[in-house]
Length: 495
Image (cartoon, rainbow, N blue to C red; front, side, top):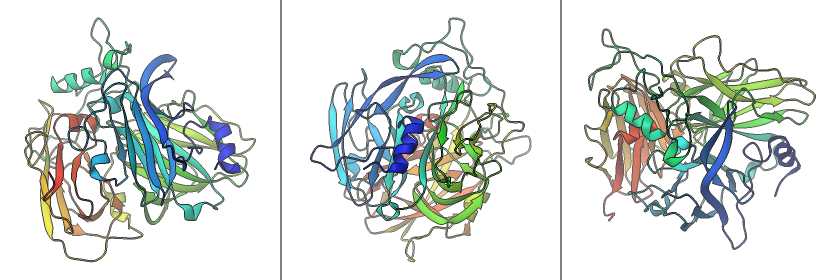
């Protein structure tokens, strides 16, 4: 059902992303999603990108916890594809990871999904095949809490992307060829050819970065500095738009908002900046946390934030995403009735800080894991050879790796140490874990599915092995994963 509040939000946003994601059908037929292409205007230039579209042409789905996720996914591309339901905990054969849980979906083929939705939360869906995610093959996936159906607040979804007119394969080739730091994105004399045959000819100037470490070097060694960004992008998008033409979401009187932020970027961490307004963080990665009030919140690649705030009467409130370590930004505007919306520059006055773990250390789960001893601790070293752009877990690239073995019913801890020069947002499929220590200091941190491990840091997480299968465990920086930083968590007895 579309409530009056959701209807008004849909009228303001075209019902594509913000506030009006249709519910999954409760009838016999499953909801339909199609992997296809779509067109965007990026900085006055046409771009063809991927999409996961509903029959009405919009992106994203909204379901209700306690119901079943019943979806028919069809591949309308001229190449194989598949979609992973990031943040959900399906049976492992429905997790959407080629080579781990399912075969890629051939062109023209379809597949059905049907599994219970145990928890509410802000989630998303994206391709796990090659570099398709960089081509914006991603969309919101919101699981609403039926207990909150009567709340007087307007739901707004903000999905972030980093965008390049270049073919992602060319970006990866540049990184592997030693061009990534200062040269990725620079065009050749003949221009470029777009992703998977799409016409994306264009220019994208890179920027110089810090000296490159040898594998295993600490970020705080003399003369060395961490690398924050290794891909130069043409634009940063908020709900498919730049600040040259941002989405303006008109508020109802009262102005109470639940902002659901999804970092769907391939290689960019952000800070969410509310400017003069204060917001209250109530969930991360779809899982409730003890409320934290502030004006700026970090969000690593693949993470999500749920922030409650109120738009003052007569005001227009920009919600900005600031690129880590740089001045670039994107965002949308929450506008009270009658408020005037001023132009916002896409470059801020100052560079945003690097993401660290100070905010992570403040977070506390509302419902932490039950107290019990850890049965198995698995050390994982996150390393990289920047010269060859090879990224490893415990010294091995995916395909040559040894799966992380667990047994059903165990409490498992993964201790992740990062001696490399870049941060790694580490994601475990099929489970939520709790952050239990930072640099060996215990804490009862947030429940998440993705946690950032900055250079020189150690982060320990714990989870209950309660979803048997073979599950992907990887860095969610797309080019790090493509460079080898992926393995699997494998339950004993799974074949």
